[in-house]
Amino acid sequence: MTTEQLVQQIRKKQSFLCIGLDTDLEKIPPHLLNSDDPIFEFNKSIIDATHHLCVAYKPNTAFYEAYGIKGWKALKKTITYLNKNYPEIFTIADAKRGDIGNTSTRYAKAFFEDLHFDSVTVAPYMGKDSVEPFLSFNDKHTILLALTSNEGAFDYQTKKTENKELYKQVLQTAMTYTNAENLMFVVGATKAEYLTEIRKIVPDNFLLVPGVGAQGGSLEEVCKYGMNKDVGLLINSSRGIIYASQEKNFDKEAAKKAKELQLQMKSALIAM
Ligand SMILES: O=c1ccn([C@@H]2O[C@H](COP(=O)(O)O)[C@@H](O)[C@H]2O)c(=O)[nH]1
Image (cartoon, rainbow, N blue to C red; front, top):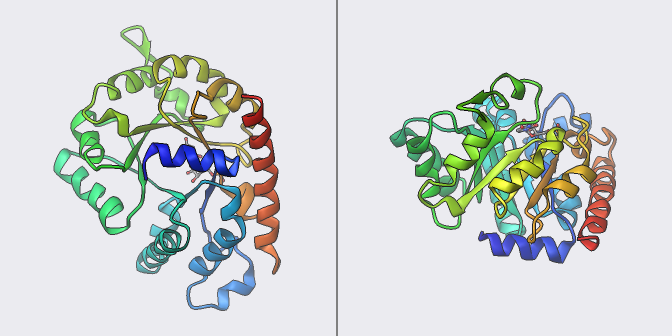
């Protein structure tokens, strides 16, 4: 999917919501555990109930890898279901990959060519030759970790080397990479106060913003400091939406939570 197509969807749906499919067998409604593939059944119900309220889904691969081959099969069924039934939806494999060049190429092939995701999250620590293999795929997006939502972000990401914070160096250096137009960046909603500085360095790139809902980040502040002329934000909520209820109507309860966020996003778009 191109960035233009993503922006069109945001305008059409009046939403820049990304729903995180962090599917955990210990948290899904117990009645689903009797089915052949409870992870996929849960995801399918959530997707069918919420697709009109969001523009992206983000399965975090850890939740699938944890179940071995069964988890990978459920991930493949989920992305195939999304691409077949809702091709307008932007898909993110939250896998946080990155390695020496030839290994990164295999990761990129796995997520872009085998699984057909639109994007994958990548860790910047190994530098240019670990990131550029992901960037070389047309109409695919590499979402680089810049300033993460967790407390540990302060261990390195905000520390200064050569009088500049590491997250700023990541943003600036990454923008010099070949095919940098395919870059998006992860910035935690819990770090909204940094967004003004971040937008000075990457005014045009999309930001994937996890951390509203369960982690307590403010949607209002993220919009205030992070929006650009094309909206430029994908705001993720996982647990806050998908685990709204463990009852039979869990999908409808999830949709209610997604609707609450979509309505706030609609207001932010009107105020733009
Ligand atoms: O900085 C980061 C990067 C990734 N994540 C991931 O996003 C979701 C957030 O889930 P919630 O349940 O809405 O808290 C999860 O998959 C994280 O691994 C992040 O939170 N922060």
